[in-house]
Image 1 (cartoon, rainbow, N blue to C red):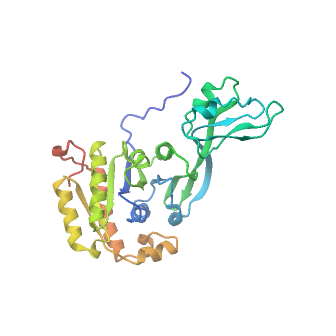
Image 2: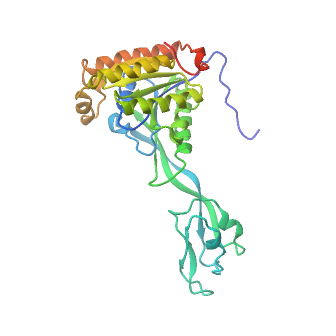
Image 3: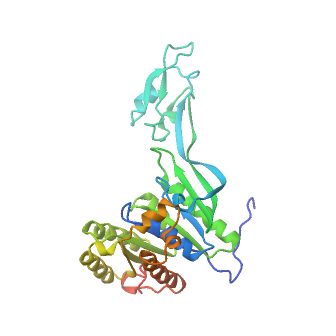
Length: 325
């Protein structure tokens, strides 16, 4: 065999993965993850919001390892080999090829690929009879391994306007899980991306438990419904927490009633508290900053989440896809 296969020892605990997501940005999921890290201690952390990572702003990670990430391929015309036949421009469906490249002694102008417009389909390289088009992997981002005051952290940053964020998220999760196994840590705490798109799917697939963060608004309920449909599709136990619930108690009641009807577990409520912002300014989680206020709410939520991680039960009416506490 060319590679060694790592086999988990009999009886060794499976590394659990808790991912915190929301239907949109700004609901407070990163603040909750930072507070959970302070409460859990000795966990592996993963920031899977690779388009706009901000967990590092609170945890102040110390960089240990930096790796380039290649999320796809891109075409590049070699001017010295181009005979300006125009076949590539004719076949490109993304209008990414332009006839304004440098001359080469054979023709006065050659073709050029716009790297921003190129979608990496490879058609131009396949049909170029002169072999004048290179088609290979390109660096589209970076991923990092760092140390924080609460444990190791894997995070990443996708390049501007780059694609394949789901693939980068999968890389982050895989590395975080590997580190947890190597260090004997039982939990990977994941700050997921907002929404329900590709990076969110890559964040939640195969995880132990999802905590969906929502706000007490009609749009918050709408976003929660989309998130719940996603986690149900992938059969992942799901808990709901309403952040800033006291801004609209009636809407909070609506959301919790709907969650119960759907067989979703309720992790609790977190009140609005300006201390969260004050703590972030100081580079701390609110749990480290104060002991009362919303910090006490978060402790209760974490207790519920931790209990669910240890003893998850399932609602058979939803196909075993949601935690029912």
